Image 1 (cartoon, chains in turn brown, green):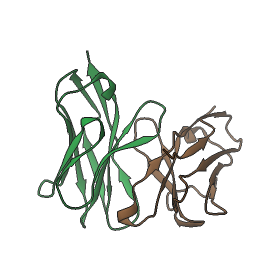
Image 2 (tube, rainbow over the protein chains, first blue to last red):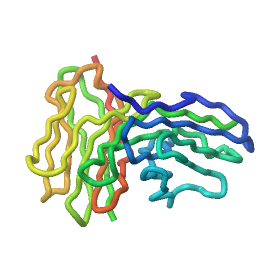
Image 3 (cartoon, rainbow over the protein chains, first blue to last red):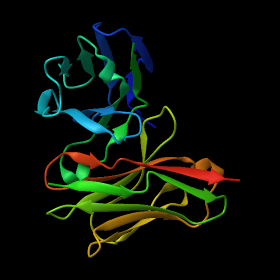
Image 4 (tube, chains in turn green, orange):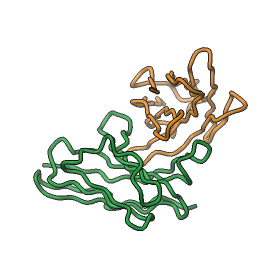
Amino acid sequence: EAEVAQSPRYKITEKSQAVAFWCDPISGHATLYWYRQILGQGPELLVQFQDESVVDDSQLPKDRFSAERLKGVDSTLKIQPAELGDSAMYLCASSRDSHLAKNIQYFGAGTRLSVL
Amino acid sequence: AQSVTQLGSHVSVSEGALVLLRCNYSSSVPPYLFWYVQYPNQGLQLLLKYTTGATLVKGINGFEAEFKKSETSFHLTKPSAHMSDAAEYFCAVLAGGFKTIFGAGTRLFVKA
């Protein structure tokens, strides 16, 4: 069964350092999502791509976070500089499309970030 | 705007007992509704979904949920809890636009 791949699974960094997370969606899925999940809370959408275009980044802290999906396949989420409050699980998900009928999201295992 | 409220951040049941996890949503248009399960240090796995049609939806692992428009609810149930059901469960709503909104989650504990 196809899966969403994420790496690394765990990342420990010091504040003010740069970190990057990678996601490879299920083959053929046009829509890719990055979520942040703070301990004890539900996932919160950071950015959504349709192919290589950003369709929603309203909750992305753009002063320090950036995301790209250059060829419309895999994606990278970067934080620079990292802050203590960025400690969380970062989840990537993909769906065949963003249209309602095709918007069944499949999640990767996530990257747990700890900022010291 | 849409929103999701999960009643009870923690639910504890005995093995073999009924599981009931509550979810209420708010949406100005007909919603799609989802339940996801998350095991420790894992991503979310889809349990079941309601889109249109039959309001009683069956999912994996013996779970089911019923969409009740009049009550704006989508509660998750399982007749008999198993130890392996211990996890965190998230209700989510997708309506109108393309953003899925997740509830805060309910952690299910199963006692032997």
